[in-house]
Image (cartoon, rainbow, N blue to C red; front, side):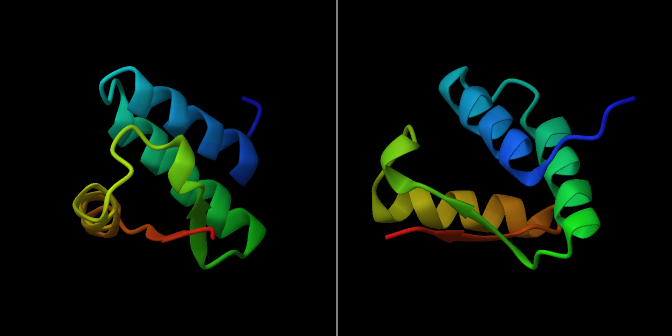
Length: 76
C-alpha cells in the first residue's frame, strides 16, 4: 500500500471535514502515521479551509485530534 505524505493526509482531513466528518478517525490515524514517518511533531492546518473557522471550532478540533494522539496548530 502506498503511504501518504503529511500533505496528502491533511488534504484528506479537509475533505472529510467538508463531508460532515466522514471517516475522520481513519484519516486522523493516517495523519498520525505520516507525522511519525516524517518526524514532524504537529499537524498544521489552514483555518480558512475549516468548516467551523471560529475559536470554539478550532479548539474542538484540537481537543478531538489530541485525544487521538495528534497535536494540531493553525497557520496564520
